[in-house]
Image (cartoon, rainbow, N blue to C red; front, side):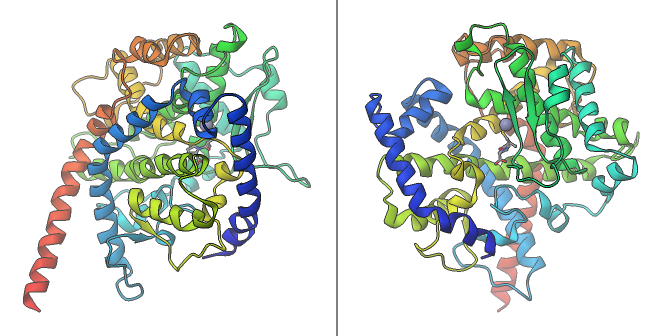
Amino acid sequence: MGKWRDVTGKQMKKKFTRLVELQNTGAKDNGYKSQAEVWLTIDFDEINGVEKMCDKLWTELKPLYSELLTYVRNKLVDFYRDDITFPDDGSIPAHLLGNMWAQDFESIFDIVRPYDIQNENYDDVLKDQGYTPVKMFMKAQEFYMSLGLPRMTRKFRRKSIIVKPAGRKLVCHASAWDFFDDDDFRIKMCTNVTMDYFETIHHEMGHVQYFMAYENQPVVYRRGANGGFHEAIGDTIANAVRTPQHLCELIGVACPSPGVDTHEADMNYLMKKALLKVAFLPFGLLIDKYRWAVFRGTIKPEHYNSEWWKMRMEYQMISPPSPRGEEYFDPGAKYHVAASVPYVRYFFSFVVQFQFYEAMCKAAGHVHKPLHECDFFNSVEAGTILHDMMKLGGSKPWPEALEQMTGTRDISADSIIRYFQPLMDWMKIENKKTTDKQTKLKSKK
Ligand code: X8Z
Ligand code: ZN
C-alpha cells in the first residue's frame, strides 16, 4: 500500500503508544479522565455536549454522504470494470479515491463528473496568467479587503514563509501562527501555483484575520469561539472565491453564459464541491473518534490498526486495498496524528462554514437565488457580520458568537444540506437509474 505508510505510521507505532501514555498521565495529573477530555476542553470548553453534537450532526449528514458514496462507487466500478473487482461489502478501496488519506475525493472529479462540459484546467489557467505564490496571496488579501477587513501586517509580509525554502527541511503542512507580539502574525506553507493551494491560502489567511480581529482582547480570550470556528473562517471565504461567478471575474473561467440553462454546469460544480466538502465529513469525525477511544483505553495498542480500519469502514465505507496487519500503524500517516493536533475541529468547521456562508450571503443581499451561486466579494455588510463575530474571540461562549452572526445558537447541518440539495436530488435519480439497470441485468442472467 505504498512506501509512505512504511516510512510514517509504521515507524511511529511504539512512539505513539508512549505518547498516549504520557499525555494521559499529564491529563490525570490535571484532574481529567484522559487526554480526550483535555482536547475537548481546549477546543470547545465542554466534553459530553460535543460528542453528542457530533453524533447528531453525523446522523443528519449521513444520507447525503451515502448518496455521494453510492454515486462515486458506481462510477468507479464502471471506470475500472476490467481491472478491479470491488469488495462485496459495498466499500470503496481507499487507493481509488485520489487522495493519500482518502479524506476527500476532489481529484477524481474527472472520473465521476456528471456532465462532459467545461473542461478548463484551472491550474493551467493560473499559471498561464502569470500567477505566482505572491500574486495568489495578494489576490486573497484583496478579497478579504473587499469585505472591509484589514490588510496583512508588515511583519506578516516580512516573516511569513510562502514557498519551500531551498536547502533546508521544513514542515510543509500549511499553518498560521499568532506570535502574540505586536502585529506578528505569520503563515508557513509551501505554495504551488494551483487552485487547491489558492484555496489553502484563503484558509490560512482566515486564521490570520481571526488573530487580528481579536488582538485587543485579553490574552485568555485571544482564541476562536471554538476550534471549529477558527478553521471555518477562511473556508467560508474560499467558498465564495470558488463560485463560477467569482472565478469568471477573476481569471475568466467557468463563466455562466446568460440565457443558457445552467443545470449541467451547476451539477458539475456541486459535485466537485461535494467531493471536497461532503466526502470529508466522516473522515473529519473519525480521526478523533478513534483517538478519543485510544486515550480512553477502549482501543488498545494491540488493536490500533485493525480498529482504525474498522472505523474507516463504519464511517467512510472505505477499505484498505490489501490486508493491513498490526505491524502497520496507518493512522500515523496523517499529519495531525503524527503531530498530535486535535481534528474534530475540522468536522465542525465543514458544517459551520456553510452557516457562516449562508449568513454572509444573506447580508450581501443574495436572496431568491441558489445558495451555491453566492459570491459576496465587495460586500462590506457580509464582512461586517464576520468581523464583529471574530472580534469577540473567545470572550463569549460560542453559541452566543454564532447567534450574533447567524441568528441561531446551534451548529446545524441545515445550511450544508440546503446548499447541496439540488445535487442530492440529482444523485438520487442517477443512483436509482443505476440500481434499476443492475436489477434488469441480474434478472436477465
Ligand atoms: O490541516 C488543515 C489546514 C491547516 S489548519 C491546511 N486542514 C485539514 C487537513 O489538511 O487535513 C484543512 C482541512 C482539513
Ligand atoms: Zn486551519
